[in-house]
Image (tube, rainbow, N blue to C red; front, side, top):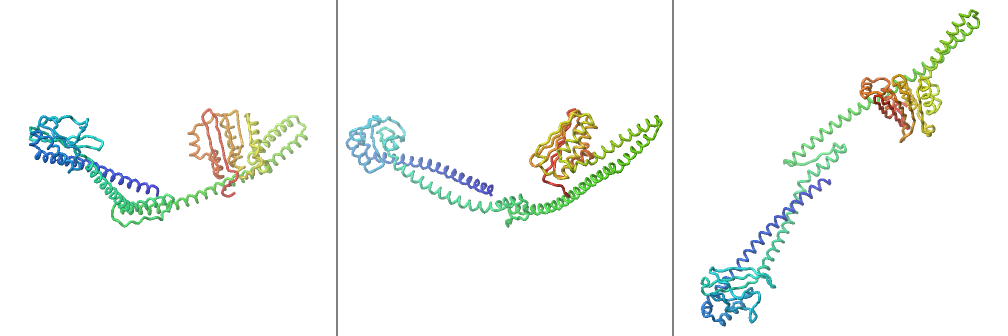
Length: 475
């Protein structure tokens, strides 16, 4: 709406400025033409008065009868209001009579310069306004010269009156033209305004809007094309919504499947851990007990050494079985707080693999209710990351931290190992290597984010961020 109002105002402003410019030019040309015309009329009038005086006073000029000449010019001056003064000179330019009375103006010439052409006109400024001085020669200056000063005041008043009326007429025409053009513009721009409003509704996904215009001109074609475009957009939007719903349904099903996969994997880990601990572990413990009985009943020293060696090997196997069972599913994962579990895992890993470890955690994490899924996901990420560090990174230092930021619990795992290039990470993503891919899937199922940064010979950092208050699909 604002854009359409601006367009209307701009066009109307251009029209007004154009009309005012045209009227101003017309006023200029009219003023100049009238001024020249009135100037010519004054010159003609001066020549007529001079011709009249010359007809009546030529003989008196030759006789240099100043008295009769003075009576003549005073009579002519009194009968013509626009005549300010009259001067009569002989053929030599000497002044014989004038209408200034006893005091001849100091600014006026003492004599008239003779010339042999019909007349000349000069413009003077005075305290009464412009004075048009017309000097006419009598018989090509052989008899004398007559100089008549005509006031331009009446001419200026007439010129001002004409220009004033012309200006008022121009303003009235401009106002009427602006009103007419404004109404016409409003009618012309109405479909464009409706198109603008419709486009604004389409911007907010309202595809039911239509613009109606019955004309067969360019606006009609534009309106028809616009309506057809809206119909196509509505059909495409409906199709896109259908595809989006199908995609969301597939993503939902995929999330459920992945969640069930992880749940099945954890259940299998629990089962195997329990079997190792309760089944195989108990059997190995029984073997150790039987070996001790054999050792106590055996008198042969060599056989005793053999039994002792066998018990040592089996005890080592039992220890490995117990460690494997713990790694598959630590019993403390469901009992201890997340900070203690993570600290224990970090320092146990460092102890058994010769790493220098550092672990830190925000104090408020102990008081936060962390769901089982979040706890398990973060622990598996820590477990996978530390396994990779031990087997592939050749690192010396391991730094792990648990922090809270904007309602998210963040796990950061940093090592100073050999690292890897972006191509390796991209290849692992494309081939969906279970380690990195499993980390990302676990985090995304919980609406979190996983960031992995690594550079050759500069170590690796893994940062997982999961909202504490949000749960996965099936939780």
